[in-house]
Amino acid sequence: MKTSSKLKTLAFIAAALFFTCTAKAQTTPANALRFNIGIETSLPTGSATIGSPFSLGGTARFQYGITNNFALTITGGAYHFFAKVNPASPTGARYDSYGVIPLKAGVKEFFAPNIYIGLEAGVGMESLDNDFWGPKRFLISPASGWANKHWDIGIHYESFSSGASYGLVALRTAYGFGK
Image 1: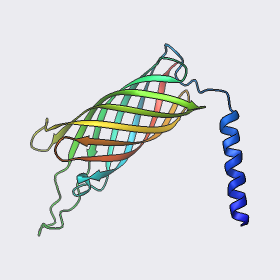
Image 2 (image 1 turned 90 degrees about the vertical axis):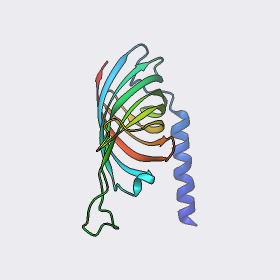
Image 3 (image 1 turned 120 degrees about the vertical axis):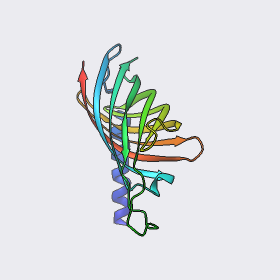
Image 4 (image 1 turned 45 degrees about the horizontal axis):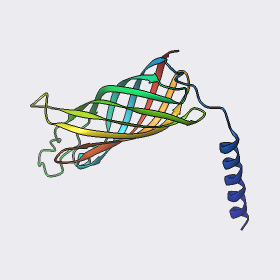
C-alpha cells in the first residue's frame, strides 16, 4: 500500500512538472541549420537476427528549424551488421556480414524542453560482400530522444522492408555544430 501511494505521488509530481513547464526547447532555432555526426550501436531485429548479433554505424544529420520546436531532417550514413558463427557449419564458418547505407528525410518535434520525437523515411541500400549495391529497401524510422545545443542522444527503431523484412533498434549519440 505504501509503495502504491509513493508511485501515485511520484506520478502526480512528474505530471505537474510536465504540464506547468512552459519553456520550450530551442535546440534548433527557427531558420537555423544545424549539423551533427553520430555513432550508432544497435541490435538487429527480424530476419537480421539469424546472422548478426549486433551492428555498429555512423550517421550525419542536417537539421533545419522551421519553428523553435519543429525541424526538418536529412540523414545519411552506414550500418555494419557483424556476422555470427553459423551453427550448421561443420568448420565454424560465419554468416556473411553486410552493411546498409540509409538515406532518409524526416521531421523532429520538441514537445518538452530538450525532449523530442521524430520520424524519418527513405531508402536503405544493402552492401553485400559479393555485390556492393545489393537490394534497395524502403525504411521507416520513428525516434525519441534528448538534445541540447551540442548533444543529441536518442533511440530509434529502423525497419527495412521489401521482400524480407528486418530492422534494428539503435542508440544514437551525436555531437552537433551550428547555432
